[in-house]
Length: 275
Ligand code: KIV
Image (cartoon, rainbow, N blue to C red; front, side):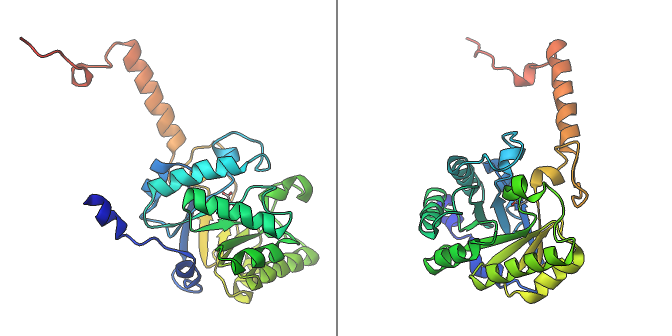
């Protein structure tokens, strides 16, 4: 009965996100686990199972080491935890840069094994052809231009991009080609406001900014950053909570109670029935 009622909540999909171009800003966050996805679902239009999970959850130095298996496992968890937001899973480094056919097979595997409604790829120079190949075969694809975390080892690190004219023109062109290839939305990361506005005006799909100003059609942040789980966050992050502080306080209170033998107390203890 309750399963029947749950089925009536319609999940957003690529056309719903694409239709928001120039309208109410799209609210997007990353999610990696079922309980966090459940907590974010009501507020968000789109939950991204970002390959940032390699750094945020698994302690890797960058996203290059993230595997298909990691993305699928976390994608499944986020799908189980959420009901309404569109779930997009990042294609990890090495899963889409080769032949379009191979990228398509990996995207289909992600979608079938997680149930997610789309995938995201970072839009390097050769990627638009792959996006077009996948979109023509029914895979909803989100692009990602500007700072491309999977390219940090060749691209100068986690720094804002498009600082000179040539860099701006390259990013604008990549955004145009990504849009023309059929991406339903494009993440724009780490670029100046003027470039973000130029891209947003130039392409038909909505832009989703991260460190790219309010000039985009929507915003995304890494959830763990905005919840304050780390000591350091980039300039573009606004912290909406101090979860690290809360966890430290809770752990210290728990340690105090265990050592003082005040936990567990009567309320937290099972007793045998009398007689
Ligand atoms: O992996 C990720 O979390 C992302 C967002 C930063 C957009 O790509």
